[in-house]
Image 1 (tube, rainbow over the protein chains, first blue to last red):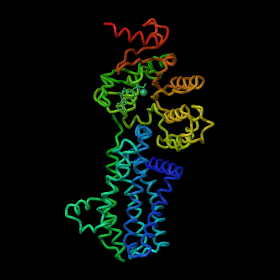
Image 2 (tube, each protein chain N blue to C red):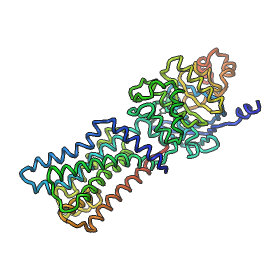
Image 3 (cartoon, rainbow over the protein chains, first blue to last red):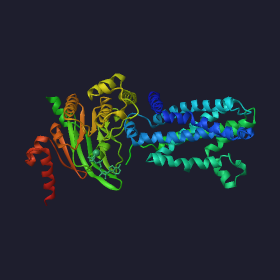
Image 4 (tube, each protein chain N blue to C red):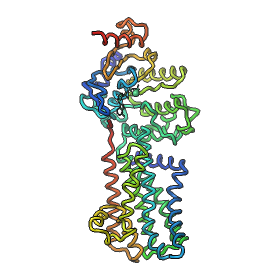
Length: 245
Length: 246
Ligand SMILES: Nc1ncnc2c1ncn2[C@@H]1O[C@H](COP(=O)(O)OP(=O)(O)OP(=O)(O)O)[C@@H](O)[C@H]1O
Ligand SMILES: [Mg+2]
């Protein structure tokens, strides 16, 4: 590993993103628009917005970052630049961390925008501290990024990468406790939800909604999400192959 | 003169019994050859005969099913070689949404090459006037020259160039072959693939390939003498005919 190379990758990805206005808008503006839409839907019923807002602050960035990352890294694969980089003195982790850092920076901006909008303008009320809300939102966006990095290894085309979205993301949204509390799910599904990262994101957000002081459960949720992030990067590095068929 | 003799007898690439299967098809059934140091070796043969596959093996990005490929005494693709072997892929592998300069600067930092080296190689491939153009906005030939410039960045001892002159005009082609010759004189070993048989005359040594096997591996002049042909294309056809006869 070489921090200089990691940094060069991160800078390069950010330069590319800066040129791609549409993708940048999708990452920064879309989550804000979606929360605003939600707020508008429950204009006459603020409690529902207060209940759904925080979990969705976790879910929207997750989805958007997953999608953008998986397609962007796949483009690197299909353009031949990935092969070229791997024939150079670049550690696999340099590449993955470079991507994770670049998208992490975008995720940070995105989360700050979305949280300021929901709390500042749309009047979302949570019991817990705001910084914790932002931390969970950023972490979920980074989770989306690292999972997107991982799955792009299993796709050959951008079309295939997009197919992971309904296959891997929608089940997590259904089971994460947004629609039915996880404890009320049938046992089998409850167990499944226990191994899905988004469940912990939504749990953490729910904690913030209810409790003023953060307890160890909140810390555990954060640790589990961070664990998934690290595991996704490590697995992603393990699945990158310098030699291909 | 002693030096050049030494150079000619030292081989930089040693391939033995190389077997590669791609997509269920045997592409290289068991190829063996050596590439001498400080020369331009041309790899010629019809489309699909396995030129790119052999080059990928030398660079160390191709999965192999048997045999060995050693470059500069190391196993191909080993970490020690990653700065010393420059590879230009057949399809230009550069970032379309970065400018020429940004592309070169990025690859230079990955290779640990000084930033000034970027400007040198941009000039070498004649792209000085397009440094600030996005690679995606360049013509096909210009984009492949960006890719060639990347392969030259680290001043590699071995350069593997997959059809570097495709789509270029005669003037530019002559200029690039001049550059290759200069690099070889300075000690670099250059392996170039080509479809264009008339480029063969510019190589010090030729490997003619057909269906994953080498049907000739010789200097251009002795290849012509040996087959009695007047150009490389005719020599190639003569060799194919010889094989076909029982
Ligand atoms: N990505 C791939 N997956 C599976 N098989 C492949 C792949 N690329 C090439 N092949 C097979 O390997 C054979 C040799 O391909 P290769 O690219 O080495 O040929 P080439 O001599 O470089 O041809 P060209 O002059 O057209 O570039 C092809 O005929 C094809 O059957
Ligand atoms: Mg080829």
